[in-house]
Amino acid sequence: MRRTCVVGIATTCTLALFVADTFSERIYTLKNASTEKRVIRDERPVGSNGYLCIHGAKGRLNNLILQNLVGVHMAHHINRTLLVDDEVAKYYDVDALSLSTFPNATFKIAMPLSGVNESCYNPSGRYNINHRLTITERFEEFQEQTQQQHSVAAVDNSDVWYWLGRPPEDVYG
Image (cartoon, rainbow, N blue to C red):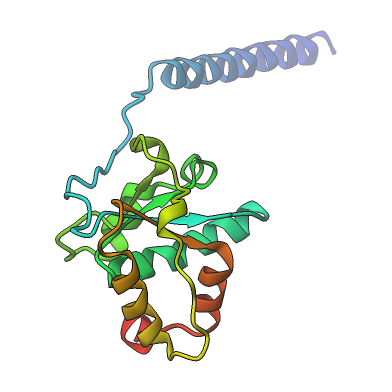
């Protein structure tokens, strides 16, 4: 019986040392792990027509993300860079979104609003949506209405959701 106890204690101690050694090795590896992240930066210039903002963004985070994804396609179509709301940019890699959505574009499709000292609200550049026009005509009208204005063109939250419901064929086609 004594012999069995001694063998059992020796086995338990050996296993405990092995587990402790493995555990301390993993802790050491985690402590000294490289904190380098693979960072992708979109170094392209902003769109030739300036910036696009979605004014009056509201809702849950998933709604804001979806709204900005629609805004990315809208911005590309009208040669503007979408200024993504800071709340969304905090959780979403905007540079990766810009590069992966339109990799062959000659300008940056999206960037965080905090990267620019501009306000999303542009009272002199309010776009009035005309629901009688086709979706493609609405894009063209937006381009005409905002071309001679400040570098920031703001569309209303409801306009973006309307575009989401009826996307232009050449944008999503």
